[in-house]
Image 1 (cartoon, rainbow, N blue to C red):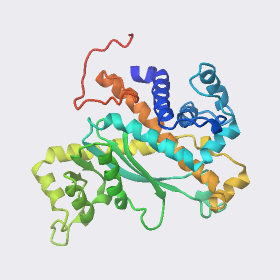
Image 2 (image 1 turned 90 degrees about the vertical axis):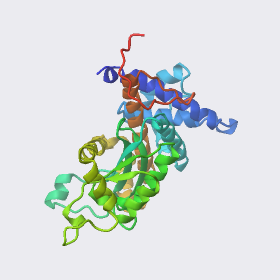
Image 3 (image 1 turned 180 degrees about the vertical axis):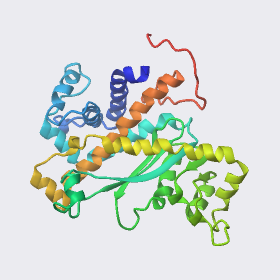
Image 4 (image 1 turned 135 degrees about the horizontal axis):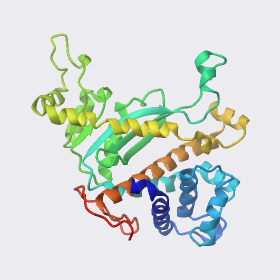
Length: 342
């Protein structure tokens, strides 16, 4: 409860620290003095999203930061649109996301993986689509492939693909997610997924990395004789040898469903920039800038999400994270008396 009550101030503090690290990594050149430094761009975009402000109202939010010297200047609406549509911005957002993942690399050993589709823009109402008033042809959708920690529920791995076509299936991106998680320094123990990941190739991939794939076994995973399909024996053996732990780990999948539900409920108007005609062109693949902006928007969402998870874990573990010093959470969840008034 205290984490929620004090989240706003702590969120801004963490975001400012994150921006300082990015500014040090990408010093601003004199020729670009009228453009925000890398860290300031991330700060402006993420803070605007956190406070759910429109592109026009974001300037009033950022003006106090500019007055106190915490940001170079408060950008106007068109400047923010330019930053959102720039492919260069994605590099800075990816670096920022990696920094928000780092504090969890020691404490997490078990990850939850899943994928879900989400619409990049609202072009037509769901009622019109559902009841056939008119069709919605070729609207682009994203498919989010995510890995979150079992203890912290923080985002540890993340990728975006189109929602349909070759290479967009859930299991096809498991290897890439595991690469991201291990690259962050996480020593994997259990990879917890749904039945869609129970493919012999993916089971062996997880075993090769020294971990165990945990997923619910169903009738389709057995042959007519009732025997487990070849390649899935390690999952079946674990379930037989450790039934209570197996059931506990399967129930641990619920937070990743909550993660997707949360992101789908977010206010999509925050990224719906451009005229109605431009958004229609984006739907038909004719306006690349707005689509780039929508991809960047998802990275902004993930940064916002991880910063809120850091705030929660700080209160649970009596730790304070600093990106500039590279601090981490410990292995063990510490339940201690904390004087939050100091």
